[in-house]
Length: 301
Image (cartoon, rainbow, N blue to C red; front, side, top):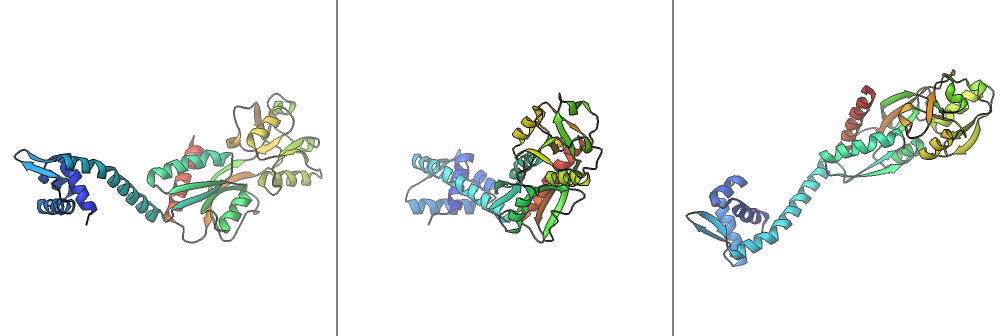
């Protein structure tokens, strides 16, 4: 019967040219190396190794057999490491939900660092915060990134554990060359006729903030378009076709836009890492640790 130990012994002899050195490399005794070599040669009914005063070397048949089994052993060892990683990570595939903008700047770097630690596969689902929470509560993802507004509890869910990573004030994104771009501060009372680029989901944080502020002034929110495409949002604003509510981290410097604060309190956008309450797979904890570190580095810059 063939065994992996026999294969390892033959390859170690090929590499080191000595039974003694092969035994040292494998942390076996020489009798153990000899036993496995004889068992392998007995099974194959052929001499694989010749020994003389200079050491040990493979016969032509031994060299051919070693060349065939080396990649097989490599694949087996890789499979063993992968299985051990998955065992230690607690999952075979880690599924994560995230939103775009700042999520796209944090999550890819975090996944790259996670995969330096473990070979567990990672699948990413792009979704807005309310959808991420739905997927998380339904067991369709293991963790996620969401954002909400600091003074609201719209996304407070009892069975969800959240860790705040970043908190940034909301600002109004306007065209740099437009009339609003010349102002240092904006008053929503003067923006009654201003159209806004809103989210496709009216329950998302920016839309809730807009409705709250305009409602306090007794004014309706005018919409130019509903989209979650960041390029479209920036393009519309840069052309002076509307304004958008966002934060500094979400601004694309390739577009001719600027951010302006408002007289009214717009609150802050909190970016949080979310998981189900209770025990979670170790890979989820590792990802959370990496995200906290990356977020801290971003704040420090």
